[in-house]
Length: 287
Image 1: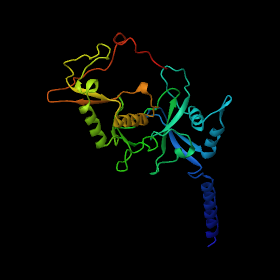
Image 2 (image 1 turned 30 degrees about the vertical axis):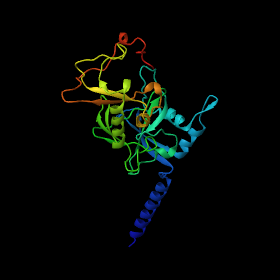
Image 3 (image 1 turned 120 degrees about the vertical axis):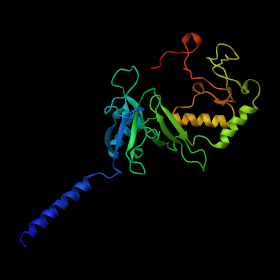
Image 4 (image 1 turned 90 degrees about the vertical axis):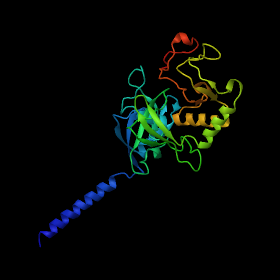
């Protein structure tokens, strides 16, 4: 049939064009698509396509006489695609760090590759002097934390997982953060402590009112603090890892152990102090 030849030729040409088009599309090793967000945000994400060659340019980016780390150069460049937030800072705000949805600080291109299940990465931009905020995403969302951020606590326990419970205020349920043995060790330390560290009637206030604290009928529980036991130190360090905040003694409390016996409790209350309650504390904003 004379009609078959032109049809076959047309089909061949179409196939050849499709083959050339497919060959021109970079594979996952050369290009990625990820969704870019402001720090802690669950909305207004922007899809970004980036090749490994483009990311490679960040390794040679300079600021004045100093060469910027690739991750910082990447965050600065990405700041042009979304509105980066920072309280009371003039616009535009420039990010200096970028974090992946699993808490990893982005320093290289491979971190932008899709997840093992093929999902696009979510990337969050963090302005200078601010800390990474875990996003809410949606109610009951489960986010596995990278083992590079918080190493699993044992071979028998899986990675840390955050379950989203509330966006405002931001509340998560944390799984695999401590073992039963660690919990029992903390309790044992509190029950066996003596002197100022012994478990005793809970108090209220800023702690400046009196050395013994202020007893209140609205809080009748008992509590103790553990800052020095090996288990407490390990759990405090793990908490800093989870929040992606560099560990600093000036930013940490001990672990509070609270005991409620029958009829004891703690009434609903606002947690705040007035400047006159603690004249040594800086109640001003740090921008």
